[in-house]
Length: 273
Image (cartoon, rainbow, N blue to C red; front, top):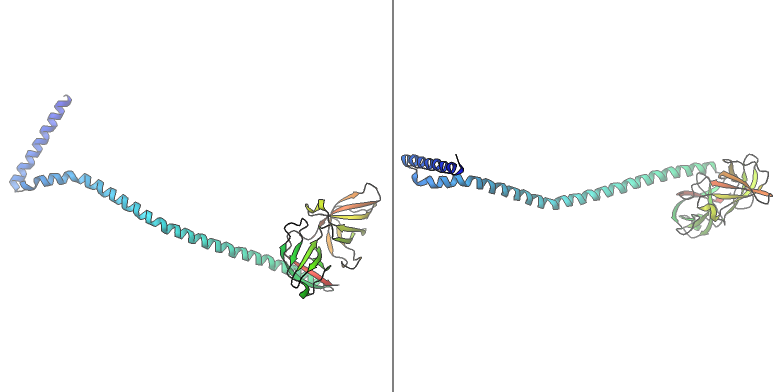
């Protein structure tokens, strides 16, 4: 059967179907409504398609309007997260400060023979390579120039300038701060001072040690008490390396300060000893 014959046969079947529907409609009295039913049946697929498109448009519109709500919720969540982070930061800071204050309090008890003032570090000199800093106690608290500054770990530096309610401190890393010291089991005498070369490594020099010194890495170094500024037996740090001078007349060493000079937050100022 060729294609044309198939079309002709299909057409005849369709005509017979239509005639049958008309005969049935005539016998039941529904002949006048038959075209409407045929058109209605033919329109069903189009109605389904139109309805589906309408649902999609409505869903897209709802989502578009929901974007603004989602953005607002997102901003609110960001704000709440920022507040939580700030609270966590404050908690960590307070916990750290409490720990530092506890250590300082214990140091005060151990150093009861000294008159001391506790202070917070409130600023650092951004252009000073020796990590000088400012504290929140000054002349009104009995702090004076040349007062010694310590932390719970050891010697930090010296007060070099005062105001009514603040003071500036030069640290051990500065060449301008010189401290008489006693080092090692043999109690060798020397002078601790900062230098440009060692400041980057957070180290200091120990100069004028005897050439026969037996100092070694890890030996403890403390203040000698010679002079009028530094009281005796304050921990300064530990020996890192010992070198005999080229002249052979003396030795010098590198010292690692015991105090965390670059990050210290709470200090004691020794106002009298």
